[in-house]
Length: 398
Ligand code: PLP
Image (tube, rainbow, N blue to C red; front, side, top):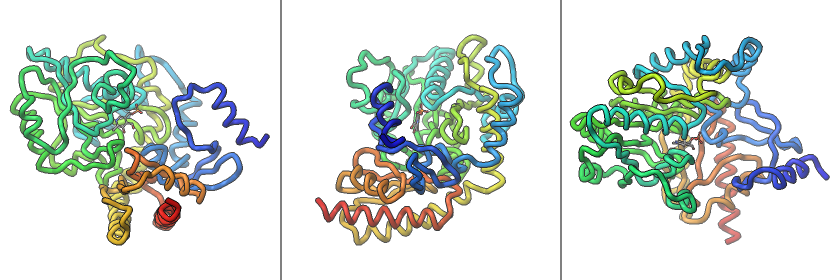
């Protein structure tokens, strides 16, 4: 049996079968390249679903992790570590938000955000309803699937209550729901899993105004669109507004698991000792990696690079789309790009994989490009060439 078959067999025999995986086992990564257990090399334009934004195994992140692992690994939140304190300061300085809570994943950061928005609203004598948008994705825990798609909810009822849904970019739909019961509105400025859907500037500014008027927490989930991906360090910078609460995860840890909930002091005032916690959150090694990621994004001007590279790629894809009937639309901001097809995307992704490119399809028909922000122009162009070639081949076989 080939090595790869043994790993795949182990996965099939022992792992909980919830991930419909591609049939490769990955063993090594460097920058925008990744290798499987048979030695085949791929260009990675998925980056672990927007996680490896500084590339696989960035030498500085690797060093920071090793340095910290030699000194101190875990201490619990009964005590403070240096990297955790430094990361909280750095996140505040970068975002302008006052307080940070560190956890382990995106869903956990959103759970913390829901709790904080509710605690704040209750402290003002109001209810705890959270409004979310259609096509949103905030995670796979019970509360986060309560905001999500029906297909993620089925079989897991009863779901936690107090969540409502409205269409995106429709201010009147939110206005109609505003009562004293509403504690928060959660929005991805650019929806990721929902198919790279960008919120309008005017819409988000109106939501901000509405939240100000009614003292409702505006929560931005920047777990996928944050950390430089859209061309600014945080996506909210495109809109000239600041959320009351922002959640981060994915790219923050440069490959290590970490989530963060940031907030304004006014909202943080509602939380007291014992209101929320986590055993692993703010782990010194993950924090050391995240600190390094923030420095790399600054030093290597990666948000700016995402803007430049993304704009060029979007132009190329949009030009191609004009003469390709299988493409309905190309959407994107920075290096968060979606190509909506009128055919199923999975066969195209499978063909790209055979040709040495890792990408992804969301919502069945939207090909999603989320490459490392420091991918070379040559590699990204090659990945797009292979996407076009794969689409042509799949179309001709239908
Ligand atoms: N929010 C957004 C916008 C996401 O894209 C994701 C994951 O894809 C999550 C939350 C959930 O993050 P995690 O999988 O780390 O729980």
